Image: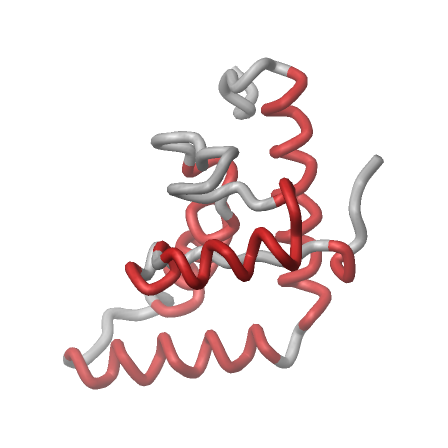
Length: 120
């Protein structure tokens, strides 16, 4: 059963502060055993970019938008990236579709006992 975007909470940044015991305790309090992360009962699978929206969607999407022509300089590159991220914020359907795809990949990963989810 696929989850709707309203059913998904996603924290994907690996910030050291999120590994602190006070944060881990609060996440456990809010989400019980549904937390998949480093130092939680269910560890995040190592080397699993196929499960992260940033790896299977965001970086390729931004690259396709930002590099339509070579950036003039680092400042131009930075402005383009910020503009495209802001554009995504105005298109919730695009990010919601990416999250649904991520949920489908996670389900497939479970079905395959942690195996690859990319078609071969």
